[in-house]
Length: 255
Image 1 (cartoon, helix red, strand yellow):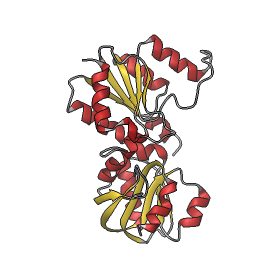
Image 2 (cartoon, helix red, strand yellow):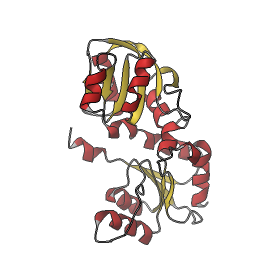
Image 3 (tube, rainbow, N blue to C red):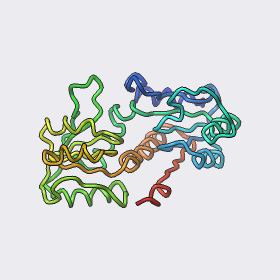
Image 4 (cartoon, rainbow, N blue to C red):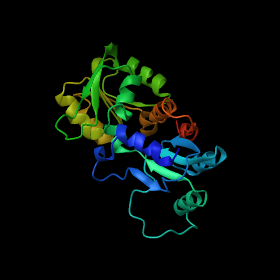
């Protein structure tokens, strides 16, 4: 089996033309004609991910956040960022990124997040967009404080921020994995009781908390679940070694 067989399968489910214009999903480094050994899946590509891939004889790394994003003007192998690229090339490891196409695509980051949080009747939130990304759905009536505890349990995060009235009863919930504060207004327009997203700025919360409660579980917790979804998806369709590497221990140092 070739590396391109995995990539072709993923691109049928999450086509690259779904990605935002500013994004850089797709092949980042490597030759997809190479025979596949094993696969490593991670949210981000750091040195630990590469070392784990080497130990597990993985020659394909699939990550959510692209390693190559801004234009590169030079590769100075004395610098950490360039060292990662050097290590990947020397070890003949392909890197493939699934970013906003995975956020937007059916069954991707946001649908998986809605599933984990047990939302019912899931629909697109930002229906005015050509490529809707955020979702909304319904939960059995619950206080915002109790829902926040439920989120902490389901997303395995030790801390989060709840903006608004913790005693407010909620039923209609919007969400967007990663930085999705741009969808707060859409959630208000759809009369949602609460929106869950990350990287919410203080003044964004201050300007909107009277109209909608906001839960910010952190960027990592809102998206890291998707690496296990991709692992299950590939294991159900391919007989090869598939591993995940999560940076959660690193992030937990800051909670």
